[in-house]
Length: 165
Image (cartoon, rainbow, N blue to C red; front, side, top):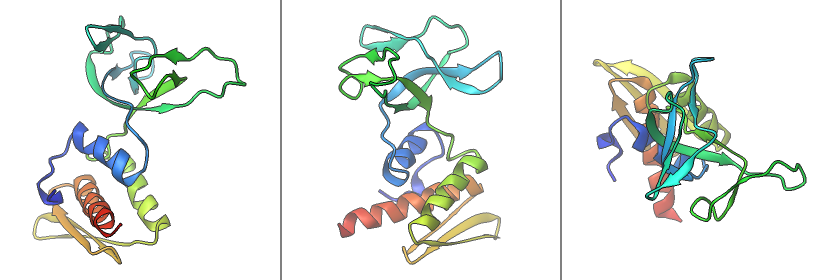
């Protein structure tokens, strides 16, 4: 996969979650939306499975996107969702995958993870593009936005690491 050609969006965010951050996406098509109470983008808490698709009865969960799960501690006692189609069964709570490719705060989590894993990121703006070079990992990618450049460089580095293993 050529990291320079991956467009910003929820598919890239899911790839980053799984391949860079190490957080598995449990569903790529979960009801999500902006909560009228707090304005945050949230995953639906209560869903039904109908015709193979998860649906929410909440009118503000009107978009769909990838989600990650926090697993239930069985000693805690909260009844989990039970569905063999998601992680083999027990999920206490799902959260939308962060908007890594569009939100600089989310993208910066990637930078912090790369640094923790020994990479030395160099970030600069040149010739109308943001550039991210990951010294030690051999990745150097440019893009029109910094979050997208960070995602593409991290994805390229992850792909190179997978080729070496």
